[in-house]
Image 1 (cartoon, rainbow, N blue to C red):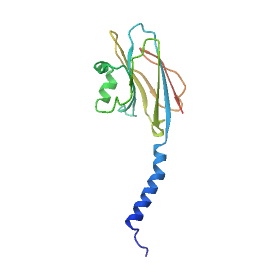
Image 2: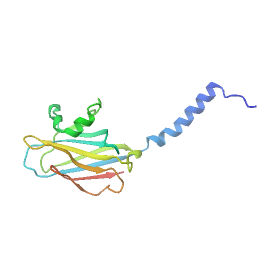
Image 3: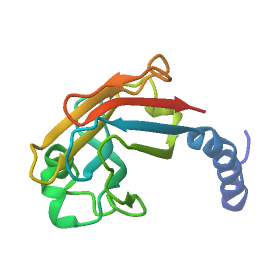
Image 4: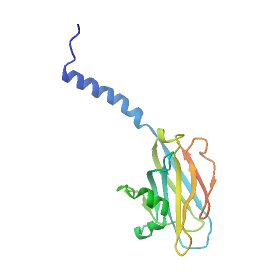
Length: 163
């Protein structure tokens, strides 16, 4: 009959197993999004770039363009879905994006999000113009990488690369 493992030896074994497993779980890829806006003839647009899961539930904010929080209510889908995320704006905000201009955003994503039913969504709004919730929705797949996708109102194209 073998002796039970001592607690210090068991703790060391578990710690070593976790140290080997965690890098595999944390492995990720860099996502670079390039959003070209249409020349819609208005003021700079507020944009919320975010991820939703396969059921349409909010997963993560990637970027918010536009610095005045009082206008975030116009980014309706993102605002409604992300309201419970207290860190939704942590380090992911910048200036609004002018008509005809390009927004480029880079984020690190876990491999598990790619080809797993997640979507990249962008809500858009411009002062004195119609709001455009989910102006564009693109499945986050390796197949869509590098292929420009067309938006509904403000977004001319969204293209993303995975590295």
